[in-house]
Image (cartoon, rainbow over all chains, first blue to last red; front, side, top):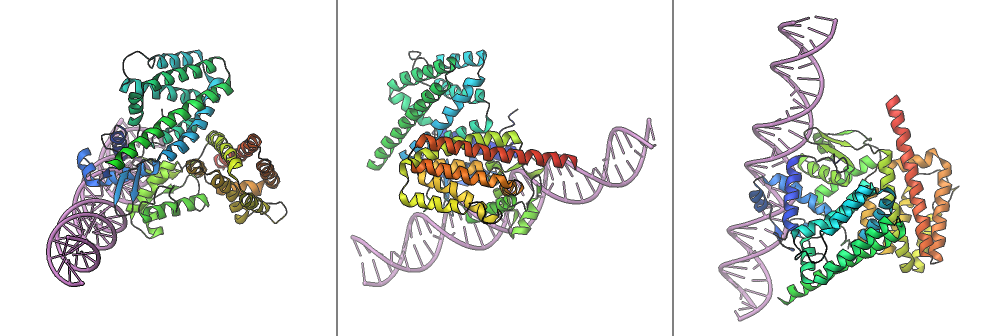
Length: 228
Length: 228
DNA sequence: CTGTTAAAGATTGGATCCATCATGACTGTG
DNA sequence: CACAGTCATGATGGATCCAATCTTTAACAG
């Protein structure tokens, strides 16, 4: 069904790539860590060959960095990189909203609303489920927008940065959670009002502020690291 | 110096990937052709290993398609894919212009103008040089915009489609060349007037129409193929 | 005690080997 | 004569082997 994603080449490489990506995203493999091929191969129960190709795949995505004869490390994103990337992402998600306004159905709208309800403040602390719901909210809009390429590019930008930190951001700044929910509500309102330009602006500022939070988290993080 | 691009992993794979990509882009390897690893390895004077990894890299970019145990083929882009991709590209190049308005210097502007002069109609038929100048015009704006991620995403979209066809489009429709030059001139005017929103609109419509030409070319092409 | 150099260990990158899978042809049977 | 099944051929994918390079450590000299 997923005709857009480039037809999974050989299952194994993609599986290993996904596995490694998941471990990086979840923080199990921390930012800046060395990725030794032999280790990964043993941990995943495959030989080094698929690991090598998987690493190259991840490198293309920008999640890891591979230096010629010294192996791969999980990239440490600089705050300015996050701001750059999120500026692009904001533009794209804005476009996604514009398109969604034209194509959204009643069912789609209700699903969006239901998804955002899972994020309503007061339903317990942020956790993996609310984080998934947050992702789902954005993904749903991309699906509604009906432009596969657009969705893919946004996803790609998203996956260039370890995402577990988003959860951390939410945990460290409970206020952000309220903001997040409220901003989603404003996007929903714009979509319901069929106001494409408003939807674009709301989504853009929402994404920019999310990027700002992420960038600040990286700033604090690197400050901590350098001080020991 | 190119700190943005993901630090060339191991020279060989990237070289072979670039070599294969170049052959596809130039049309030497035609659209839809099978890519046999052994053949490519012999042609490029390397073993199959770097070829395999290079193919995977190209697959991630979307230029080729790899089906599990049957090898790789150069993807045959559907016209709707081109339109989708160019809608995204238009949005991004529009953003690039907005940023460029704020950051452009006199030197940068002169370089842009000089580059576009190479495209002025009447200086002989379209050729590889004018095609390169056309690319350069856009790339310059991306550089001026100062957002590496933005430039990379645009480049990536660009490289997902065999580009030689652009030259073919120009050759088949001489009128397009005039349009191309004139549209560039209007973008230049907007940049000089520091009118960011105008620059955005001009660039967007320019890219959209370029995408439309490309999509039409693919349409004609597939019609030809199916009939003959 | 410190800095430099050399050697050993470890890790990546390229090449080769082998198993698996798909395709196509050929043969036998209905 | 047509269709189905089997076998052979060729190509991909995974594993392993070997060489080259980098890092680290230790020893030696200043």
